[in-house]
Length: 403
Image (cartoon, rainbow, N blue to C red):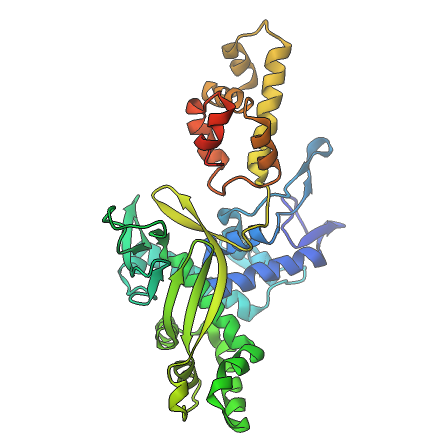
């Protein structure tokens, strides 16, 4: 029996019981599956956002519709740990069988919880920063500068990065020099390798130059299929050894990640002997669309097609609030800004930010509504910097990085 509260994604309530919402349940399974494959909340969030997935729509007081927003990492982690999806109910520290249908099967649940636990343990012990980086010695930027592992400490936690060897020397660094989050790059590379192993067509095409006999090709396809099935549960040290044994290099460009795989190395990893000396140096290239955008001193990955526009719901809502605030202020000039601030319970800083943002150039507003603003332009960035926002509309584009 459902006792009330926020109805979880994947279910509806009928006669005080949770019943499956088929469409949402499919999304819940997708969230669990992709986290098991990616092992990263950041990558999962970016992928869901790029694919246009949004949170559950809910009707609140007065018929107001809430939800329908991009998933935050916090919400995703709550979903991934919610035992309701296993058909169970947690009360205090006890877990009981529920009367509702489970969405996530036991094996997938176990894999996800193990990855979540490992991630928490690594963050607590900082082992992720100390462990050998997956692509150390294999990764380069688009100028062919080697990228080396490094890390930064922030609030007691360590964050791993790959940095172009030319970046510390500003005289030698080029337009393609960069510092990127290592865990995001590693996750994307591993996921692309998993896709390769799961594709019979790709594996068969890769081995075309080896002139394999039918039985050898069948053995390679079977080996790749087995690896694909075991990928999510493979011990990290085995996955690292396999990855480094087949990758020749990884190149980071501004619009993609390119992985070069050695054909003979892949064959050996799948238990196939290489007879042709001419094929031993053959390689294939796997490409991942992942646009690199500047974010602070480094760059972050925006996953998906670079020309696909997705509006930032929070940013659009902030614009709506800004224009509504200006309209109210201009409609009644008898109140001062301080009086309006006190009446609306908004801080003076937010009111000031809203007023300044309400004078954004119309073309900038249009681009934000259409989702064509830079990914780094968010409410979190706009509010504290709005006090320096130029009133001159020509200067606003440069200030916001929208040239």
